[in-house]
Length: 175
Image (cartoon, rainbow, N blue to C red; front, side):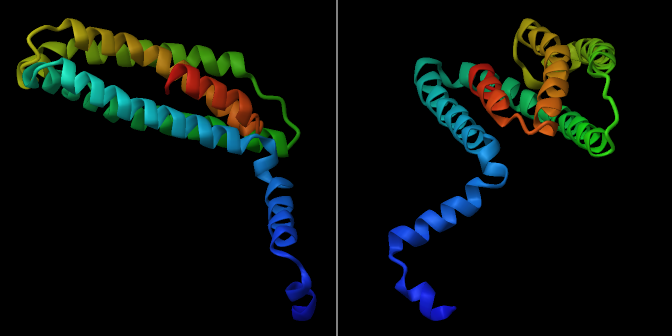
């Protein structure tokens, strides 16, 4: 066995490794999802470089505070996405039907409730962070139902191993 391994050229070994990788989950579009996520991260980095130069320190600090709030809100949204992914996989493995429309309606209701809760906290958050206007925080609250529904849709696509569609949504939507 060892002797046959030594006779293979490096090109043949790389081809064999790639064949093993691409026959599994990577063949289902996970590589495109990886590149889309990397593209979003690079674009975020470039965004911060440009915006930090265009805005003054005070305004960039307000943008940073709002982006930090968005970052905190992505944790429960990501948990919802993971729960949907697990539910889709479980239903698929058991050959059961899965009602995506009912789940989307639940996400809309929960998203609107979370939006109203966040909007009610806007004066407190605005006073604490010294943003100067409640409008950016109200826009963040409007994002919550959209992000919740997006998490359900992306979670269901991941559960169905449709990574190319998720990659497109991630890159275009800059999730």
